[in-house]
Picture 1 (cartoon, rainbow, N blue to C red):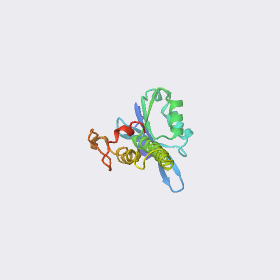
Picture 2 (picture 1 turned 45 degrees about the vertical axis):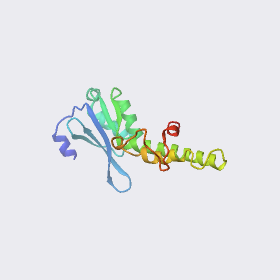
Picture 3 (picture 1 turned 90 degrees about the vertical axis):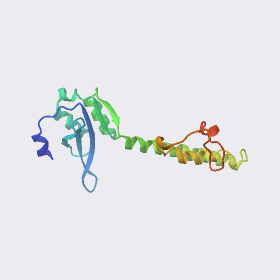
Picture 4 (picture 1 turned 180 degrees about the horizontal axis):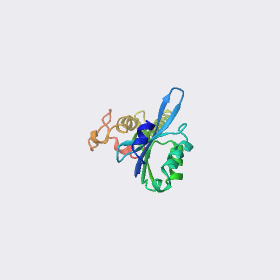
Amino acid sequence: MKAQLSRSGKPKPKVIGVDEVSIRRGHTYRIVVTDLERGRPIWFGGKDRSEESLIEFFAELGKPQSARIRLAVMDMWKPFRNATEASAPQAAILYDKFHVMRHLGEALDRVRKSEYGRLVGLVAAHEVGPTQGIDSIDLLMWILPSRVSGLELTPHAKTKRGQSPYATLGTS
């Protein structure tokens, strides 16, 4: 890959993508930087997926070319963010959708489990009836992981027990 990259000339990217690739078993990684406007890789290197390894890319690119970068797309790996902020501080950082959605899903699961536990505790203490609020949790399990385009959130939407979910959903 390095031979192919050297034949393509010095890159002048404005929008880059940063990712790591595994080159063998045992967590051995290299970094691939892609010019996203041209749709081609422009750098393959580093000794691992560390901040220092990505800084090598910016050093090879040079300060004038690093200053041209306006956007860096990457996963939420902190060393990548740190290296980009240090070497191209003017560049906006955009996290890829996969990682954002994974973190969002994990956060929603924690809220859902906490709310479910709270409601079960209220039922056990006889402060609410056995189905009051539980339907909203059941609805959350369906709504939150769904795509927006397929949802029908109209006033006639009902839970399994035929009750409207909106009264308690807004407080969850």
